Image 1 (cartoon, helix red, strand yellow):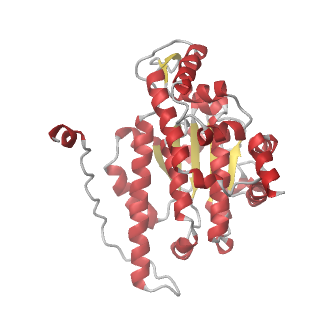
Image 2 (tube, one colour; image 1 turned 180 degrees about the horizontal axis):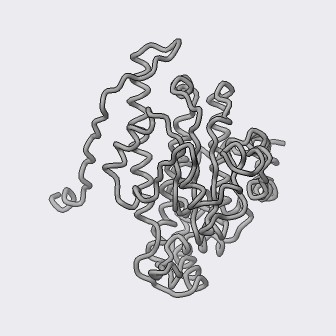
Image 3 (cartoon, one colour; image 1 turned 60 degrees about the vertical axis):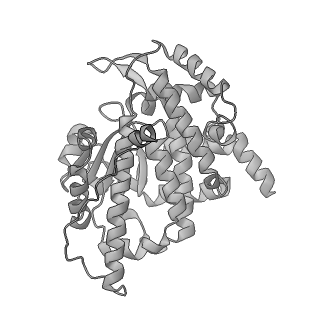
Length: 356
C-alpha cells in the first residue's frame, strides 16, 4: 500500500484567478456569466495541462534503431504482440485514410525521433513510440462513440461549409521551418448558426482531419504550427454559445488530439486575445513547463512575430493583414485530399452500405 501510495501523482494546486468585472451579457444573469467564466478557466487549465503532458511525450530519448524501416519493423512486432488493443478502432484512422500498418508505425516512429543538436534525425526511440501508439489505441477504444456519427454526407457538408466560410484553413506551402500551418480566424465564425448538432459535426470533421495530418510526412518530421486569430471575438458571443457545444465529443477530441495522436505541436500563436482570455491564460501558463511556455506565443494585431517566424507578410491572406487574397480564396488542396481519401476508404464504403 505504501508503494502504491508513493506512485500516486501529486495533486495539482488549484489556480486562483483574480476577481474581475466581467462584461454584462444581455439576456443572461450575472450568476450564469460567472459560472461560465469559472468553467472557461477550468477548461483552459485542463487543456493546457493536456498540451503540457503531450509535449513531454514528444521526441525520443534513447535511440533503439537508426532507420525508419527498422523502427517500423519493431513497432509492427509491438502490434502483433497485442491483437486485442491493436484492433478495430485502433486502426480506424489508418483505414479511413487508406493507409497501411507500415504507414501507421511510421507516424509513431517519427513522433519519437532522436535528433542531434542541429536538429538532424539520428535514430528512433521505439520504446517511447510504442508507448504513444498503445496510448492512442486505448483512447480510440475508449472513445468509440465518436465514430458512430461520421459519414460521407456529414463530412462533405462540414467540409464545404468550412472551406467557403474560411474560418479554418490548412495553409500551403509549409512554413519557413517545414511545418504545416493551420490558421483559425474567429471573426469568420457565424456563432448564430452554431447548434449542439453542428458543433458535434465539426468535431467529427476535425477528428477525421487530424487523422489525415497524422500521415502527412511534413507534419511527421517537422510538426504543426497553429495560428489562432481572436480579433473581434466578443465575450457575450462565447457565453451564449456555451450551451450549444457537445461536451462529450469535445472532451474526446481534446484527449486524442493533445494526448494520443502522433502529431507534434511546435508552435501556437495566439493573435489579439481579448483581455478576458488573455489574463487567465497567462496566469495558468505561469504554472506550466518551460517547454509549453516556449511553444505558446502571444501576438499583437500587427502579426510581426507570425510574419517573422512562420511566413512573410506577403503570404498571408488580406483578412490577416497580409498581401494575399481573402482567406476564403486560399487553396484547400490538403484539406480536400483528406476528405477525398476518406470517401475512397473501405470505412466510408461500409458506412454508406449500412445507410443504404
